[in-house]
Amino acid sequence: MAFWSDLGKKISDTTQSVVEKTKTSTDTLRLNGLISDEERNVQRIYAEIGRKYMELHGADGDPDFAGLMQEYQTSKAKMEEYRSQIRRNKHLLICAGCGAEIPETVLYCTRCGAENPVGKRLAEEQRQREEAERAAREADLQAAAVPQTEPQPEFCARCGQPRTAGAMFCTFCGAQFVPPVAAAPAPVAPAAPAPESPAPEAALAPAAPEAPAPESPAPEAAPTPA
Image (cartoon, rainbow, N blue to C red; front, side, top):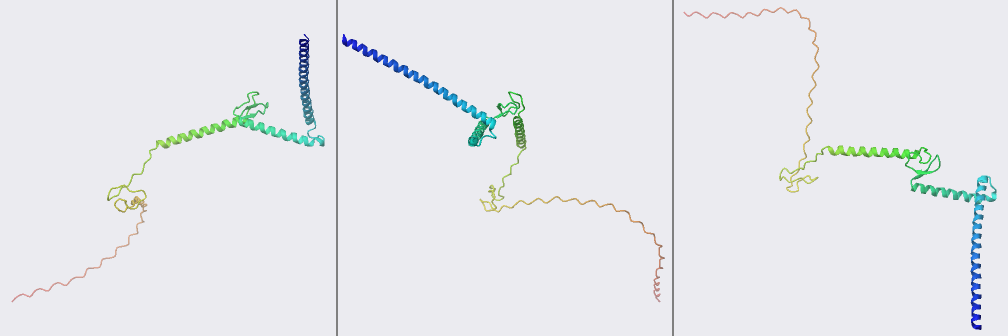
């Protein structure tokens, strides 16, 4: 009986010790969690103090804080640049009226109704591109409608074989290709002469008296035969 009594006592002591250790561990975890909560609260208060100080004394702060203020301004500028890159990747922009993020293609803000000049510019550029493409398509259709005259192949006058491009002599019979004679220019019709004005008639000169014709001597009579 003594053995069982000692065994029961040992088990009871062990159980009590485990319970106490478990309780201690649980209480320690709870307290550590509360400490973490308070540390986060302290960090928040520090951040709020710094924010208030920057708002009130950002331009005329104590020289001891000049380095921290410079780091703050640099980090803030970097964050703004990263946000701008994200907006460009998503094709978003900031509304000038309410500061909301809106698509760059809308003509008016979806939240406050302010005009979006970027959207209007993009819409106008799109319209101009469509008009240029439509004009190019119409020009292509008109060019395709015009029949294209293809050059006729040239043949050798001696053997009748087709002429090789650029060859001065036939590659089949050796005959020389005579370059085509240029067509003579059409004769130009002479201009019609201008009508001449009639010359004034000259005054009639008095006719000269005709000279008498010289008289020829009469022929002598033939002698009478005896």
